[in-house]
Image 1 (spheres, rainbow over the protein chains, first blue to last red):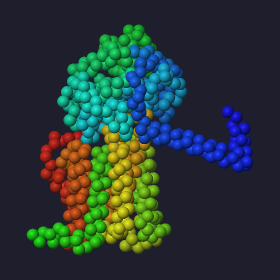
Image 2: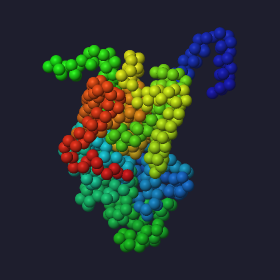
Image 3: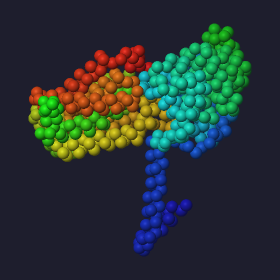
Length: 294
Length: 287
């Protein structure tokens, strides 16, 4: 509390030869220094290892006055939007409208230049982020099973042993996405649609309360889209919070109760029916063909 | 069968320097196997080449100020190697189209500065020594240092294998689950540098990357899976080192280049003999 008084006391202690006091203070300082170093190192090398946290209730997420820039360009500007606990929201908008940026800011991958994201006190483990698959090096020699296993990262981190149940969990997750018996196949032998299924299997293994999906159905066939969309709806019924960047407006209308329309700024947000109006879509700069489709 | 024994074993039974060289080759192959395979799988062979040159200015500085002091050469090499490793990953993070060009610039600068530093204090013989190494001159302290560096890089690689794998295949995912993980790229490059410094005494800065990449490239012709590639690459590294040593002994050839030449022949043989694999290993690289 009183830093100056304490320091004076310590000086006096040295002067009067009370070495034991000094010794204890030094031990304490060394102890807290070691603890800090240990924390720092484990964050640096073993981040995300957190086996004791149970599945938390899905938090509500609120973005307040969020601005994110790449160099001089503002990708999103003063975006304030809320995602209630257990809601299923589509983020839509024109290309370059900042949809992915918003998702990355919520996932904590991009740091906002201004404003903040409020997580309702959720642990980082509560979040699962599905990137656009072109960020994955699909030529890397690793099997489907190994790739999916990384979904359980929180349980084993960088260095801890994996649980005996992991193998069963992987097989179960692969069965859920319709890829039974694909465990041993190398990931570079998969088609685009199959690989998307693998990404969803890894997502299932994460057991996250919040799912952030960046264009989860882009460039895949109708059957795969339908299967994976069903899976997302099951997760929604489970009560998880789901936020997905999407392009197909009719898909959004049919399956996503809530939407956010983003064109650098937040044009509209709320119930999908109220967001997908001709007026707001035009304001977001959508071509008229897209409006007709909606 | 004394004839075969005379050829295959006698040189090692009769000459201590051949035994030392063989032990050095085994030690290096054990580290080169896993690191080379990962380097190739991450499509970083150019980075490996650049780092092997980056070892040179440091080694040359060590030579200029301390002469042929093993520790000075190696420590200098580790320092400049690490500096370039950090610089190159900083450039990789920018994802700029300049990345490849910058790497080549590092490579050229390292070579030019290294050559100037060596010739400043030494002769052409010294230059040849730094550039191409002298595996037949490897003595016990050098051998111990090589084994030590190789052991450190293998053990560290084993410890960091899981995060390294994830950082290789899906860095964005590692970032999202761990809130970091970029450190592992630097860790990996540091291990490559240690490995190259271990090989530098034997192969020189120009050729040290040969025993690192050639057996790994050959192994990849036979299997697409990581663990078998690592085992095969280690085996091929030992084999081409052994054959190269024998050839250089009987035909009085410089040993380092001979070993690298055999490694290259093993790669070309593997490439032409491999089973047809539906173009998987040459699949286009995703952006």
